[in-house]
Every structure is written in C-alpha cells, then in structure tokens.
Image: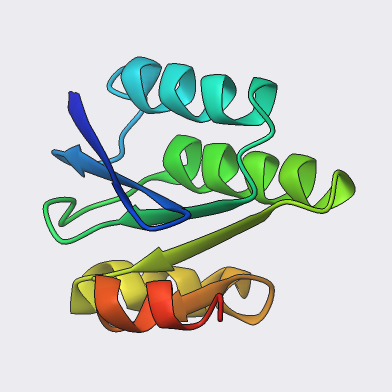
Amino acid sequence: MKVITNNEGAVTILKPLGPLLAGELDELDKSLNILVRDWTRRIVINMTESGCIDSAGLELINRYHQQLGEHGLRLKLCGMSELVRKIFNLTRLSHRLEIYPDTAAAVRSFV
C-alpha cells in the first residue's frame, strides 16, 4: 500500500491508499516510525481511502497512539468509512483515540 504524506501548517497528514490489513502495513509503519523518530508533534491519519481494517491495522494504530502519547506527541484519525468506524467502536478503540469526520476538523482540533 502506498502512503501519501503532506503537511497542513504544523500538522503532518498521512493518507494510506488501501485497506489497513496484515501484509499491507509496511509503508504506513515505516511512515509513522519516521515521524516518531523525528519527534513530529501532530499527526493525522486520513482514512478516506482505507475502507477496511483488520486486527493488524488496529494494533499498528494503537501501538503508535500509545508510543506517541508517551512522548507528548499526538495521533488523530479522520475520514473513516462506516465499516471502519463500527470496528473501532466494537473494539472500543474509538474511546481511546481522537476521531474526526474529515481532515479539516482533525487539523483544527490541534489549535
């Protein structure tokens, strides 16, 4: 899977192009690892092109959310499909992570 990275002000936005499934997460993992290593303070994962997620994808997002939080850095999510949102609700990750309807709302939430 390809991951597009861009910035809106001081916020880095990652947009994975494809489902977040086991065997497809290497590029997203690498992109997030670079941001952690560079102490990027504000990160949004735009999930508009990721219509599906499995346990490996959930674990990856949760791991980086925890790792970033330990260093005072923040990870937020946006643009989830209805299916992905239901999965986050069922796993109760929606209670731990900040989720926004779109990129603009997620970026504004850092202010």
